[in-house]
Length: 229
Ligand SMILES: [Zn+2]
Ligand SMILES: [Zn+2]
Image 1 (cartoon, rainbow, N blue to C red):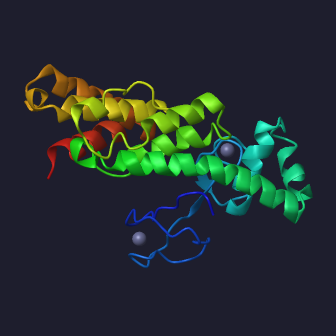
Image 2: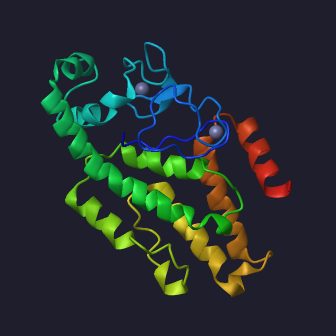
């Protein structure tokens, strides 16, 4: 399984061999009622068709191979039949190809999570947004792979010179998050009333904007994350 799975109840990350139906390793609850659509990569209920794009919903084990088939030019209507026609060897080959690219996402998301104490809006949703933006781009081009490698280790120590290359993260939200971290990290900018502080809030809000579905929920959610303990 090369798709990070987080418990919908407690946000705990599940082991790599997690399978649909397994209980959460942390809270014992139902981990996930949704699957990722093989076509549009958004989360959708495990029904016959994706609620976002109308594609047929597949089991998680087809996600990787489906993304490789899509990159090879298979269109939305032919995808289900092409997936079913793959033999075990071909499925494995596509899965391994996908895994190599997915490992880059997993690493960069883990490293971004080291910046959590610098963000005002807490929680996993922003990292899932980064992951979703990147999943769509698998398989990555060589120049995208180079960007991942340039970023490697940059977030682990938060020294000023390490966080400077903020605009070049392979995902837009990743670039925005590292910019927020950069604005928050330097002592002169840590002042609550500084303009940098507010620029940081605006960027965090714009990331949140992409995650939350309706304006009313968005404003309520941001207000509660910012001002409540
Ligand atoms: Zn849980
Ligand atoms: Zn879809």
